[in-house]
Length: 99
Image 1: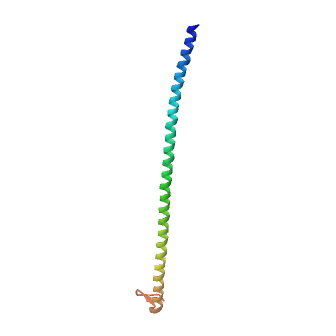
Image 2: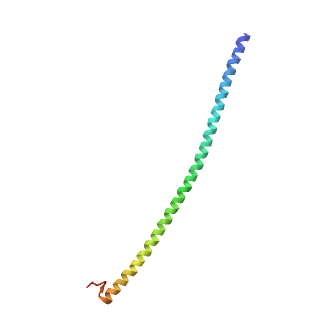
Image 3: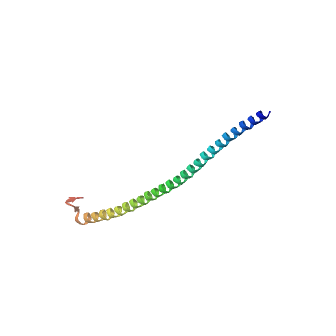
């Protein structure tokens, strides 16, 4: 009876050692997974900041283009008005008779 009790303790002890080893490996996997998730969260945050800067640069370029377009439009309006005045006074512009 003593040998069966001893063999049961040995079997349960081996099962305990194997189970403990499994728990240690499982904890190690979860720790690695947690570290990877934290790294990915930081990377997503950094990517969002970069995309935000790209969006700001695109908006600034769009505003610059609009301002330039308005300046060109004003310059061409001045040129058109000047040509109309020359046509009214001279009746022609660059040798071309508009009447």
